[in-house]
Image (cartoon, rainbow, N blue to C red; front, side):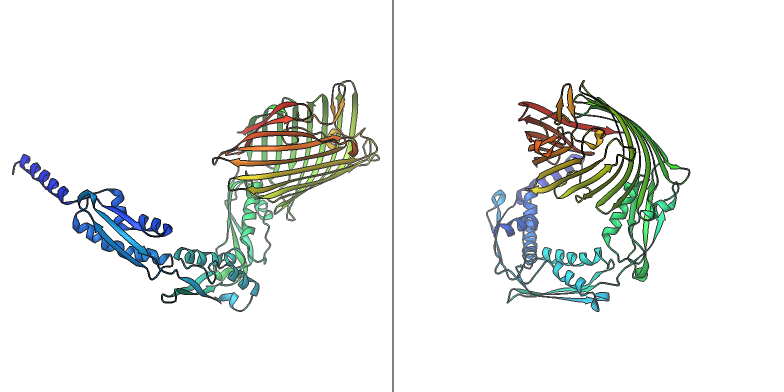
Length: 577
């Protein structure tokens, strides 16, 4: 056969097949929830969506297969005695396959029986009750296959996360009574043995002493297993400054349950690191910074750090020597700082040395510090003073917001107390008290409500002799928006001086229109004064834009100052390299 005749035969065959084949339109008459399910999964419906021509034999085959598929799909939704009919009408391009579905009564859960094996079979009634409460398919609930599968997975979660990481579902069955439209569920949970911690097994540790990673371990040998402990240990390792990555886990092998090893895999940071950064804010202006850190001074894991930070209104130099966290969870440091700032006409030059002891335990961080500080201060022509103080300070902070950059739940609370005695290298005696609380609440599916309150008070016979760091001013991006940074205080000729009492409050509503961009409305109020009776809150009202950047939230706010009768822009952005 010549090539031309061969291709002609193929063309004629294709034309003949096309005349015998036709596209198919599929319609489903069923309750909305079931109609969507059937239209998505029936073989005939999928063929119709593709729009490919089908001959009569293929239509008949798909029609038969789809009838069985329809009954299987309806059974997964709890309908075990449905009536399903199909009719094929029309011809050629107008051929329509119509399904009519009468699902009948839905099957519901009639009974649930949970049995236990392993350690839970003979003890720990509290854990058994916790498991039974976790079962998400109670008596009277519709019996759906998806819900049944999800309930079985969730049933083990209370055991896997606390004390019984080797728990498994030994058996499960759903006995369906089609005539009664009821399902009886039985499950057997094998908890395995209770697990208790052994010692850490640390891998990937080469540069730094292994004791650093061991001392960060919040678990003690013999303590019952809890998944959150492993997450806390991993977070502590990554936040320590010595490791870029940490993985903490256990092998739930029942033979090691009495003292399961804690497996720790580490990726260490370089011993020496140089960093630079830049930024800008409406509080302190443009910023550049540079830092150098050596993480293993004297081969003992001591961190030696030098940092300089230059801003338009504030310049700081810092040197610090920090010890790794010890076995009791404390991290000690010695530091010295030089600082110059000129904000709202109050110019301060200060230097300080400090010894600190810090401890992080779960969501709570505490710091105890002994600090000596001296400063010179001028405010226009009204103040020209030199202040010094040896202070003891304590700070307590609880962060109940997890690791979210943009928290919608939880709170952050900070409490501080500090003071000095005139007889101990200080110009005057004083006691400083400070508290700040920020509450986050969900507002709809994409928003949040932020409420903040702040109170500060310095108890002393006079403000004279008290270093500026222990006094207060208000106003700015994180205080009272609508007013310049630290512009609320004691107004003097040529500037605004710090005072002994502070009170601010804020309420803000955020809503995100996309995953990264959102808006805000807010009201701030507050003041700073030398006596509580002189506090006279001023208000700032405004709107803002919010951006979820990869390194944290970026805020741009426009606020109206009720006292100044002016609009003020508030913005901050920083990048580190």
